[in-house]
Amino acid sequence: MLCKKQKTWEDPFYLQLHITDKCNLKCRHCYEETNRDSAENLLRSAEILNILEQFRNFINILHMKGKVYFTGGEPILNPMLYRYISKASSLNLCTMVLSNGTLIDQFRASELSKAGTRIVQISIDGLEETHDFIRGKGSFRKALKGLDCCQNAGINTIVMTTLNRKNMNELEGIIRLCIKHNIPRFSLGRLVPIGNGIELFEQVLTKNELLKIFKKIQHFKKKFRNSIHISIHDPLWLTYKGHKNSYGCSAGIRGICIIENGDIMPCRRLDMSIGNIRNNSFLEIWNSSCLKHFRTRDNYEGKCKNCKFLKKCGGCRAIAKAICGSEYGEDPQCFLRIRFQNKGGR
Ligand code: SF4
Ligand code: SF4
Image 1 (cartoon, helix red, strand yellow):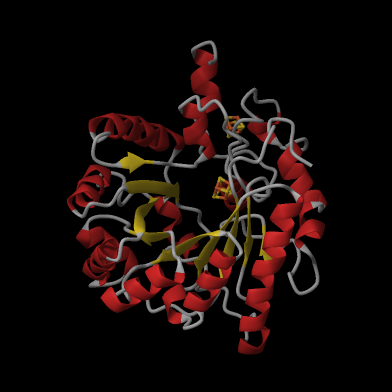
Image 2: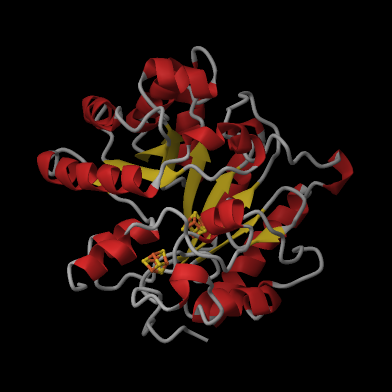
């Protein structure tokens, strides 16, 4: 069942599990805001606990390690979060919480730690003015406080930035801020214009802007190598770096997402449902034609179709769908093909 490039499952397979659709913020790029479901359709606690068991059985069948990202909405707003984390830990699944950080005080950070949280990832989308413009006034300082509380509670932390035109020149400042707060890891992802993010369409980077940013990130990686680990899982970045064991886009290869109503998506930013966990098992979804195509990449279109980096990269399927209209379309932000062809390839 492994795709050809994968000899083992040393890397974990992740489940991004949305445990609430409630949030205390109204971020401009949020994909949840336009996607509210009726209360009776939302997954109940017993179902979520059962999903964790099903997931553990699924990864055992495929001889994989498992990782669960608990998110929402804002996951801290679900009082069952701690119970879910300890359940996942007891099943030997690595646990991570993806949060806006603004509700994490010292008590909650200690509860997260006691429950067995391995990592908390908090979004910082710019320096104070930019972050507050995107996420709401006062949210920047509260997010930093949340990070400090997690650090004090001994939890590993990651700062994650969603890249756009407004914050593209603030990356060094954000990295310096992370270092000041002893954050060990920094990551970033591209803005996908879905949900509320459609209103930020103008903020989506061009391929030249993206290339410029990746060059900057290369530079920052060297400059700050003794202070912070900069890790980015974007397929273009991994290919740009010449990462040897890269499989590129992880959608359906190393990860899957379940949203609050049980709908299953290959990636939360890829706006399509491929089943519902109330009706479909993980194995059925794994064997669905959509995920098979993502693993084989045999029907990709446009520039991705005949690209020599296809197996290593695959482009971001979410951006392809959001901008080109097809989950198998080309990645419209790809600068790599032209760049490396001009240089005679890598
Ligand atoms: S054309 Fe597609 S597969 Fe090739 S490098 Fe660009 S995004 Fe990746
Ligand atoms: S679709 Fe895009 S955001 Fe989702 S896993 Fe692939 S590269 Fe990452």
